[in-house]
Image (cartoon, rainbow, N blue to C red):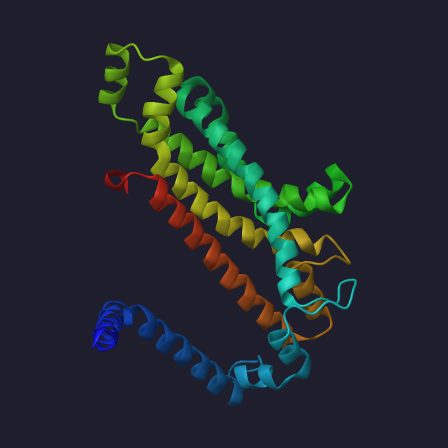
Length: 278
């Protein structure tokens, strides 16, 4: 009897879960399948000069990469998991530095109008330079591939964090500032009790934008690093060898990791930012 009741409760729970989340799962699956079918049709009739999904699966090298992402034969002959992991480590270093510098400089700019007016034209100028344009500059200045790659990731990711943090600091309500003066809060208490909590939504907006840009910049960063393990160099190497199917598969990995990174930052935001500020 108890087992029967437990079974019914589990069934009801699964049914409620499915009814609540069916559209969140079914519609994206339908959309993806529809895209793959359309891609295969356009490729088959010659309107798209790329191999279709079935053609990519039929290639032995591409199928090996898809089914065995963890293989390691030494050197750069590794599965896509290791290629992606190496790129992720570089992005983590460059992005972490960008987050520290971006938040720090954003707070400084947001709280100091003189510095804001002095540096804003420079920031607006530098942030429009695309990642690929920084590659030769980074190589000329740093003379080594790894530091140059990290610089390209950093300089691409830092601007959204810096500018959004500065805007968040400037948008602190005047009432909060007045209350801090009336209560004679110390700079330390004002910083942790008013400034940071008020600017958090803007800071996380910058962090979410920047993680996507940092991951995007890995292609430009790793093109300059010949003979290394990394998803960017893997794509460039596969393209130069004419292995288009492997390039497309690597792009799927890049898109999936980018989506996971964005959702992770968003999830952290829900844990940290108060509900009324979201």
